[in-house]
Image 1 (cartoon, rainbow, N blue to C red):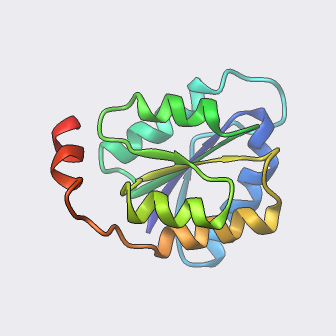
Image 2: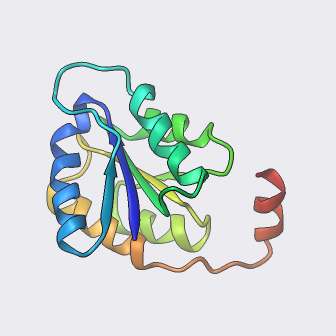
Length: 141
């Protein structure tokens, strides 16, 4: 699977860990930055990552920051993106099963490295359950 990843300075360390982890598990990762812990404006990196998913250049996306909230807001402004903030495994499962999220936002200050890997694994393997909400989701996009 081809996965977009983007972060601000707060999520840089976790982004690097997840890039390696995903690559080791057979995924192709497109890194939209940032490339250090130097302060940056997160929309400059989150927007392009989300846009790559919306355009079909990447299948899914992971965006990171301190809490993940601002990153989710930016990603969700891109038409065709459904981004959920995930701070635990259950939220990761539900954001795919119930919301069909094609991007997730992680807060590097909120989750450990091990939990972040578990969240990503659960989200990647969960399946959208469809149902009565799908027509309304499609209409919004």
